[in-house]
Image (cartoon, rainbow, N blue to C red; front, side, top):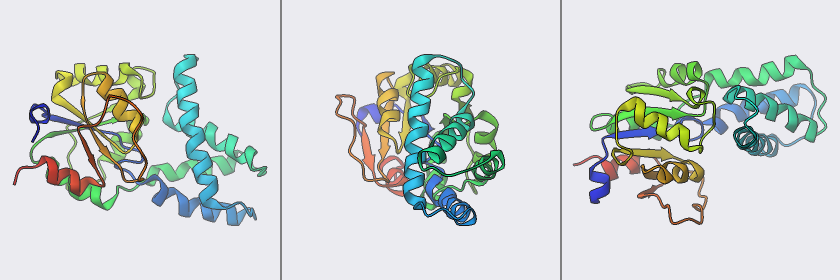
Length: 234
């Protein structure tokens, strides 16, 4: 294990898309919704557009500093934008129906297994853009996994990768940033954490290139089982 990684005692985790399977949970519900309203729009294309729009929504909210209403609000507004983009007639009840799916997000199988192993050697902390109560509820449902804390970007009113989120976590956990490792499947999250002095593990489950930046992850793995194999001593 590299010396820098040897100092790590806290693992902070992105939740939505890294630990929790957004696509696997939401896509079936989205297919049912589109079929019910008689839309011919491809559900996977719609989901990709929705997800991309939400990320843009979050970045815009952070840059413009016009107020922070949380992850679910950004997801809801992104959903409405995507429905309009695909010229799908909809009402408030349709948006409520789709947003209700977030309450039942499931963890990836490899995340469940890997987190259980990692929890034997590190403090596990959810560090999420998600609404605090939702993150706590979903994290508490993962079998055999106990998070030391669930921290939300709600606390600072900015979405990751804003530096205030990572700095807040260091203060809350009473840690030096170098004792913390950000674990995420989104390169921007690793980039933001590394810029604040964290170590980083890029779980590249979507097979996407990392950002063009000198702020590289210490580890790049395909899933949580591989991550546990790298970090947990034999």
